[in-house]
Structures are given as structure tokens and as C-alpha cells.
Amino acid sequence: MKKLLIGLAALPLAGCLSFGGKTPDTLLSLTAAQQVPVGQAQSSAGARTITVQVPSVPQALANNRVPVQATATDIAYVKDAQWIEPPARQFARVLSDTVAARTGRVVLSGAQSLADPGARLAGELRMFGVDAAASSAVVTYDAALVRDEGGALEKRRFEARVPVSAIEAGPVGVALNQAANQVAGEVADWVGR
Image (cartoon, rainbow, N blue to C red):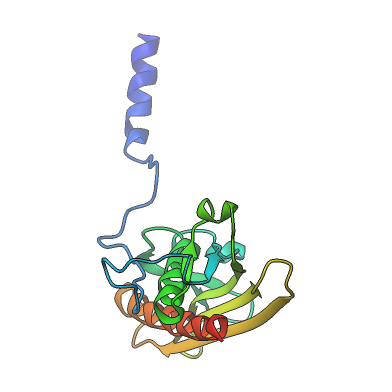
């Protein structure tokens, strides 16, 4: 009898428990505007190589949500907006595709770069979200580049701002994709000089 009463008492709580948030109807992703054409062969014998590392991020970006800088000290997240994977990994792929397409360099993964990493591009993705006061999607990337083995480290900050019509998943996703591609293009031009 005692076990039955405990079981009945716990039954109403079962509907209150959740083992994860509600998944949005759609997930956001980034797509590189410039890519190496399908089927185009690349060889390090005739082209320089570069290793593009996944950028580090502050805690506000270390998840799959889209941050909104509400004030200088307050951060919220766009309702029902979620990345398919963390933005730093997606941004690294956009960088890799854009650098390969614009510079002709062979972009290596971390495992491929063990023998000869070539140039190395690392950095920090400082902002990848929305500035509510300016109604803009903002991508800020602090890049660190070593052009040759044993070479000097070069640093440069890149930023793109794209207006958003509404702070909602759809418009924010499109604007962030555009801003990410703009930054990736500027980084590729810097790497390629």
C-alpha cells in the first residue's frame, strides 16, 4: 500500500519534468558564399597550405543559442533561435571555404596539418549575435596569423554589421550568415596578400 501511495504521489510530477528544452521548428546554419567548385583538385605541391583552427569564444557564444547584446552589460538570447552546431565550428568552415576559394591555398584540417601545417590561422570569435540598440547582426573576429613556420605572429580585428529587420530567428540567421561571409572574405584577402 505504501509503495502504491508513493507511486501515485509521483505521477503528477512526471508531466512537469523535462530533460531538455523545446527544440525549435528549424535550426540555423551558416553557408559559405564562396567555395571551391566540386571536383576541383587541390594539391600542396603547387599551392601553399594553411591550417584554419576553430576560434575560441566567450561563454555567451559557447552554446547553440544566438546572443542579443541588450545593453552594455545585459545579454539575452533570440527566442526560438538555435544553431545546428556551435557557431565557432560553423564560422571556421566558412573561413576555410572562403580562404580556399579566394586564395587558392590548400586548407588543412587539424589532423592533416600534423606533417606540415603551412600558415596557421587562429583567433577569437568575440561577437556573433545581435546588437539590439543598433538592430544589427554583428560578427567580430580577432584573427592571429602565422604565415610561415617560425614566422612572426600577425593580429588583426575584423568586424561586419548587417541590419536586421526583426530580432527573430529567420532575419537574424540570414543577417549573421551575411556578416560571417563578409568577415571571411576580408580575412581571406588579408591571408592571401
